[in-house]
Image 1 (cartoon, rainbow, N blue to C red):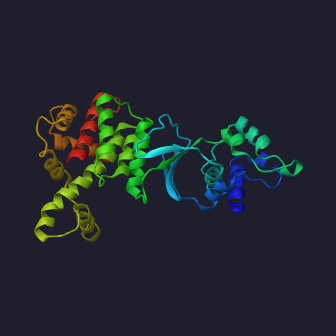
Image 2 (cartoon, rainbow, N blue to C red):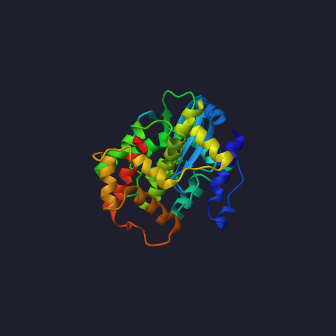
Image 3 (cartoon, helix red, strand yellow):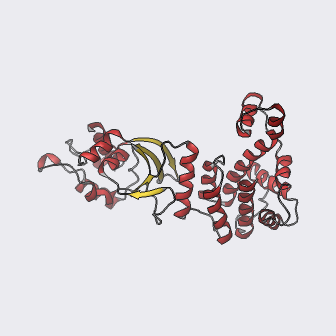
Length: 331
């Protein structure tokens, strides 16, 4: 507890103007906690971390149960399936500060307030610790969600919960209409557990259409491999899943399926009247859909020519993204 409090205040000092920092008195400083909050500070552990940006992040915290904590994320929707919002206690706040998650580039005015209200000489007053409620407004906002009904949380499950949190709080950076919004919701809430939720999260929060597309293409690549080894798995009577078998083949033999052939196999599973194929055909504009999907990927990765779809053409990009999402979910 002592070390955590020391780290908390050391991190704050380290984020301030170095010229002024040398005038800070060296004295006892700590965040006041009751018995429950002390228990949090002693026992809580950060098991996973994900950064949405340089200044925003989400953390998986274990304290008896599991919790997802967000830092500097604008939480506008408190109701998320599988998560229950809880108050942030002083022990948790101290832990996050000690691990460096509450420091940022503070404004000049905020730095002045921190000097006056947080880093004053405690030896000159009757000191019983800083009350977190009194000073929390000086630091990035924290939200804490209790993960309901989970004894363990895998890496992919962590990202699945973050996908839902991001969706409900509208963290998508690309213009999104009603059609694609509904499809994003379905893929976050109704997909099988084998889907790569990390890439889906990166796709949803990407800063531009082309980056969103690349992350979705990586999700589609997972489907390539699974589809390609299905027949081999059945012939050999292997009990491994398609995902596990394709992973072994890649690790040991550097095998991977051909992209264009794999896309074509997936596309042929869909009827001409399917929403996925209609959206992709409208985006491809008379080009072969499998070739178009692959060509868009190559154009972004290799940058050999102008993008097949200008980044400003939101309508065409949205149709392509929505179609890709349905390919991933329904293939």
